[in-house]
Length: 483
Image (cartoon, rainbow, N blue to C red; front, side):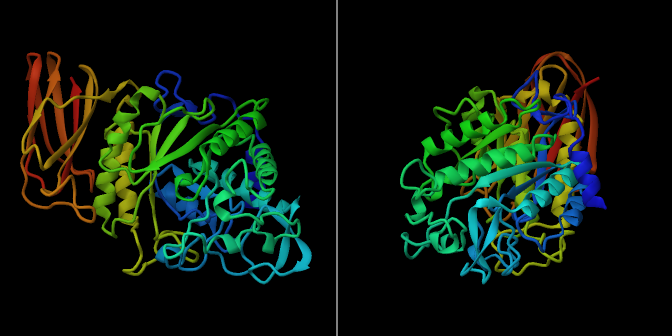
């Protein structure tokens, strides 16, 4: 019954003002359902739809409970992972044999990698689109935006770059389909030449999914996950952006399009005019926001992890990124797994990253903190001076003379930050910003708990203001507002 209700909800008329879009006053942020929106989450490893064993209703209820509003999901159009890929235990992108839900129907010919019949790339599997729409509708009901990642490259093996453990599992591989497609090298699949006849399959899939999700208010499309790792060409990405745009040209509420630009950081050059969101992975410190500020579009970090299992580093990374002016943050959360869709999987020490109920609640604190400001009127504020310049990190957003939000922590002496743990101690620091004359209230808060640790009032005559922190152990947040 719930899936039926979700589908009915999805087909209800949604106004343009309700659909996720760029904020009309500040397109570096989002507007959703008429409200300024920052997207923050710690979500599953992208298999919520394509893995039939994954209970997405329980999963989305968990995100809602923890105060988060974003999930990222792979379409499974050509891409799944083998068991233990990237050393991940209970990998949601590695469904058990017979439990991978692809967009294409099975044929009557045996011989697919999972023991089932081969796929027919000329026929749709309507069960796939029914499940996808139910997922999106349930997410909408829970106040969660869905990043629909359309494609993913086939990562080459470390020991032999000419091979990929993902490619033999793909319906696009000629050994797995009855259409005689996909005979070329896996590194050319996401290109405009040498794709083995798969470009038309990709285009047709994009048009189909975009049409199926046209009435959703909570979707944006990412062209390709990490295209820079396995040969996905830039002209192919631009072509796919155009395919998405053309497919929704006559839709009442067209969806935003995202491009995954790089790991760490890069300056965006020659962007497609159809792309509105620029996403990066593992981007700490958050210099990428300032480097691409002139784009006047949302800058996101839609994947991080692989930094050990401590919550602290991911909490700090999120606060740094959002307070630097980022619009979107998503952590890769391994506590979500089949049978543990409530985020309680006790993953082994070999897992490459982390995730927990505690971390999700901490990210919920960040979301509520930034939403307590009129953040669409804020921009990064220059810190004019600070203590312990080599080991003290501070990010400030502000609306001149009205409100300021800051996040600070002590970084590692040997670099910006130890990648796997936060510095701990009994720290006191100061920093200086330029502030107009007025009366202000300063409240210092612990980002891990949301607890206020010091509140004071400041009568300032204008100009440089030196703000001195209370003693803190790892990190602090500051809310400074005009009285």
